[in-house]
Amino acid sequence: MSAYPAALATDIVTDSGFQLSLRPIRPDDAALLERFHQRLSSQSIYKRYFSLHPVLSEHELRYLTEVDYVTRFAYVVEYLGELIGVGRFDRIPETSVAEVAFIVSDEFHHLGIGLMLLERLADVAWSLGITTFCAETQADNRSMMGVFLASGFVVKTRMEDEIISARFSIEPTEASRASRARHSRVPHEVVNEEEAR
Ligand SMILES: CC(C)(COP(=O)(O)OP(=O)(O)OC[C@H]1O[C@@H](n2cnc3c(N)ncnc32)[C@H](O)[C@@H]1OP(=O)(O)O)[C@@H](O)C(=O)NCCC(=O)NCCS
Image 1 (cartoon, rainbow, N blue to C red):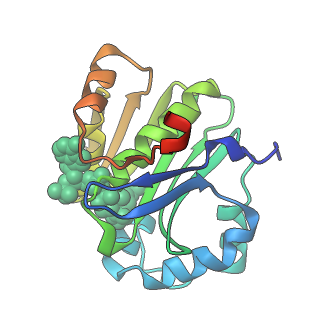
Image 2 (cartoon, rainbow, N blue to C red; image 1 turned 120 degrees about the vertical axis):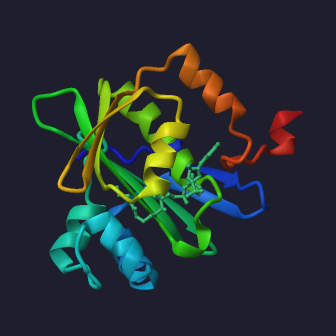
């Protein structure tokens, strides 16, 4: 495992004023992740795991929290000491493609957290030589497709058996930068006024 990338941790604030922390996941997040999962609606779990999966096993908790920060990476979003969102990528071995997955607590949907996670994951992945993200999502998952489309990346899709396979280059382009600049709803970093002076 590579060293924990502590420099990627930051405080962020949503448009509506929620003060959140964003940081790479750690092995000691297993208990927080278990509680986060227990609070999710069955619809959200189904959309993320494609099955009713009310409890994460110990093996899954270890797998999801123990990443190497190079081929496997996850960001968590924390609010008042609890997790409220997770976004991750897993590089497909021997390729420059990574599969992404997201889940945000139901009560924090539509605040731009999903899009922020995608943008931040793309930055990390690109710096590690990953050029392309792919994901599978259910055909009626408008929120997930909305996040992909709002990113400004050029998303190609293929549908089979009610599952959409999405794939897009994460190379920063004028279009993706312009698209980010327009996203006023996406949580932004808290500026420390002392440091800003
Ligand atoms: C998919 C999911 C992660 C999105 O999280 P979220 O924090 O609500 O996402 P955002 O607020 O960034 O964006 C979602 C929505 O805003 C839209 N959106 C986001 N930013 C936008 C912007 N700047 N401009 C316009 N639209 C934007 C998207 O179209 C989408 O539409 P909706 O909220 O009206 O449905 C969340 O719904 C979830 O956890 N779902 C269950 C698990 C899941 O489906 N995972 C995907 C399988 S990998």
